[in-house]
Amino acid sequence: MSRYVPLLAFVALFIVACGYRNPYVYNGPQKVIYLKTWENRTSELGLDNDIYQALVRWFQKSGSIKISKNQEGADLILAGEIVSIDLPTLSYGSGNDATEVKVRLKTRYVMKDIGSETIVLEQPGEVWTQDYLIGDSAESNRSNREKALDIIVDDLAQKIYQRALVQLPKLEIAQQQ
Image (cartoon, rainbow, N blue to C red; front, side, top):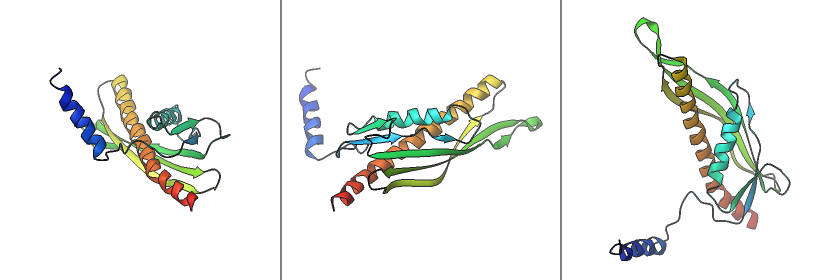
């Protein structure tokens, strides 16, 4: 183990020296984001909470960003809506039984600077899809559908987080001018 210590120290020094920075971390001034619970226009109970929790997990990766359930004291507001969910069949097996389904989730969201009313990021309509297989039991079908939705929710939260990280420094520059 002690043979590798100099090598690890060199690699760490090299990464720091070459200016590497983690693109998934916001290093600007502290920001508080008021995260509203998303409107859920579907019959999929709890999906709004799943998105909320996924967004919290992603934004916690940045030490300079705090999530709040209250608008008071917040710099930004992030609000969204689950517009629709559709489950079209992709393929059929023998006997015309469905063998594969696609979850199609339509969302929209906006992040706004509270003080200036400037829109930081906006997506007026976005469709997320994930395929899943149909099995022999209702339990496996429900489980496969939930896994597909979990993938969509995490991908959605990650994209919102990454887009926010790109836009926040631009907001800072605009506010300084």
